[in-house]
Length: 344
Image (cartoon, rainbow, N blue to C red; front, side, top):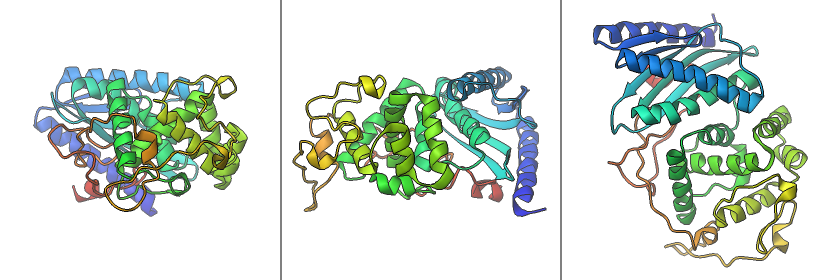
């Protein structure tokens, strides 16, 4: 048995132990075709399980144009639900020999946010894993999964993005596209990944976005895939066009051929050197902030954030420090077993 299959077996043992312990302490279990749920009450367990199945069907139709077949083994969901609890989640699974298995999902938050944000976010991870059978670029995976959350959660990401750009925490696209693991400063990756994913989805739709990812994963040549699918000449032009879209307040876009850019817009394929130049603002230090000009007229309401809790989706919490503080490091969601699970 190799390390991955051993990890999957150990994961299953942990899950069984967790269900046995939860039974002793009064938690409730519920089983559907693709999920087993451990939640604080029987009603919550049933609601989470049935909602998870609905999201799995709806989101697979939206992204793939078809329903996923049932998994050979259900995905265990461990749910913590309480009023005022920060919303977050973590999903892990194993890729091996073109297969994906060993599902595990931990979710937490208020009932409303668990049902309308955490579940669709985490289930989208499983849909992508089932479809691609390999890890996706971090920005694309987390960014696309965030687009299916409740509007209240998306608005937090949008506010944080402006704050990150104003504080020179934006990630240049050439570096972001090359990332295979989460950076130390992970929250800008979520906010910026969400914004870019939404920008591309607005132009061509969800299925073309997945086709773009398939093209890029084939040989790692993301500029080629970008030009082929979206007609941007390179990542620099994409970054300039995206920044201009954010500057305009992220308006909804029709198909790119129907977009009427403003006089100051950098259109697709345009060299940013030929576009109207913005005078960069300076941050508190002496170095110019290349991101700041886009947000000079955009009000910012910092959103409190916590880096504690489940390690996939950062937890939103009103009692912790502001977004300007750097979070702790974030492990890969694709690990067969998280380090925390191994210690349990």
